[in-house]
Length: 363
Image (tube, rainbow, N blue to C red; front, top):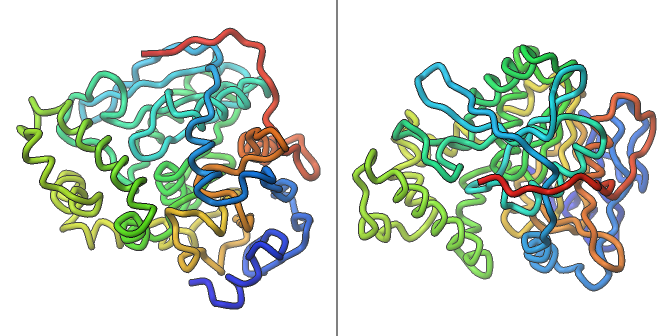
């Protein structure tokens, strides 16, 4: 856990904290390594507050690049949708693992996919089980440590000629990604970026139950109820039954945990939290985080990481926010894609490239 002195070192009067391996660095520029962490994030002057960064980014619309749908059959008889920005043959593919109840309609997903496509890569949006417009076939859905479907996507992409496969995970998807990377060399990715991961699920669930962050918890809970109702023909749940769950933690305890083989919410949160898997990471990994994240307590930010992992913790930025410039623009897409570029030799650009590709809205 982070100590009081380290929390102080990432307050608003100090530069970002860079944690590379076992060393804590507080330089204004990233450490000189082959991990290529991006330049320091500077927030939009009039959007410095953590909730302002979080909410503005969540409501910041953009179009999608042209995408095509590819159903992916899974070994257990279920299926998920892959949405691709192009043909993966002969180029890098980047899998995007979304957050809890995320979808292609999520602004962060659209901004990231546009940035990926603008680099000439194949962007791959992996719809987690039950998150697409059509429910998945099985009663089970996805959970915070579920990476197996992404592994199937890697096999699918390689069979179609992808020269390399990387991944970007966002929020819950970042937790899934870090758990997967924690398997060491068994993880088939060449490099990865985790954005705003919930290092300790129990602590994050507690944050969502008190104060202003309850608005985030209530929103997620409403989305989870909707997803379970869409599968009422499989789970037998009614609207009245789902309404009894007052928190995300309660729903995880009653539904998510038992559906996916956990002995309850305590067992689920303990085993699925990415903090317990970081030590096993061997592939180049960048964690982009903000110390003022309103969903993730600063006390859970790790202070010890393996050599393959670089944590860039900015003083401000909120949860999947990080808007920069006088008129807000996305910083995260450019920072993430810059790290994934094998040809990049130094600090990376801080804004996502523009894409002139025609947009479509998959359903």
